[in-house]
Length: 203
Image 1 (cartoon, rainbow, N blue to C red):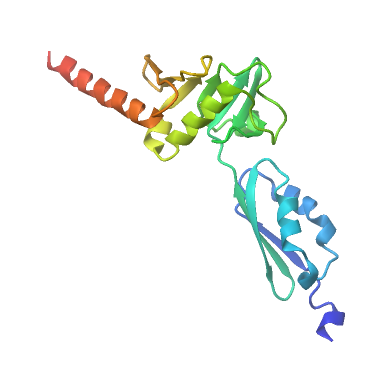
Image 2 (cartoon, rainbow, N blue to C red):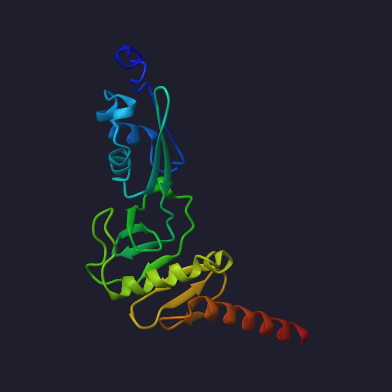
C-alpha cells in the first residue's frame, strides 16, 4: 500500500517568513520529526518546537501531501533597545527580550530605552521586569498604530515610572509625556513645533 511504501514519509520541511532566525536553526529544532509519517505528525507540537526561539511570535504549520511539512514563521518586531549598563537588548512592544544587541543587528534604527530598574533585563525570551519597563512597553505599544510618530522617537527615559520622557530625532527638546495618551501628546508637540517654526521663519 501507499502507506507502507513510504510515500507519506516526510521528504521535505519548507520554512518561510523568517528573516532573523536562520532556517538551519528551525530545521535543527524539527529534526526529531523527520522520521515520522506525514499524517502522524502533531502539528501543534511542531509549532511549539519552532516557537522556542524568542524571535518567533508564532508559526503556522500545515501538511502538503504527499511528503511536505510547510512552516510559516511569524517573527517578533523589535521596537526598542533596552539599556542597562553596558548591555543592550532588543525588545518588542510587550517588553519581551528578543536578543542581545550585537553586530548582526547593526542595521536596526531603534529608540534606546533608559532608566530601567536595576534587575529589569533577564534572559532572552523573558519580559523586561519592573514598573519602568511596563511604562516603556505601554508607550511603544501606543505608538505602533502611528508609524510616523514611532519612527521619530530616538530615546525613551522611564526613570520616573509615572512620566515617560521622549526625545525625537533632530529635536533637542525632551517631551514629558506622563503615563498615558502618548501618541496624541507627541502629535500635539509636533504640530506646535511646526507652527512655531513657521512663525519664526516669518520674521
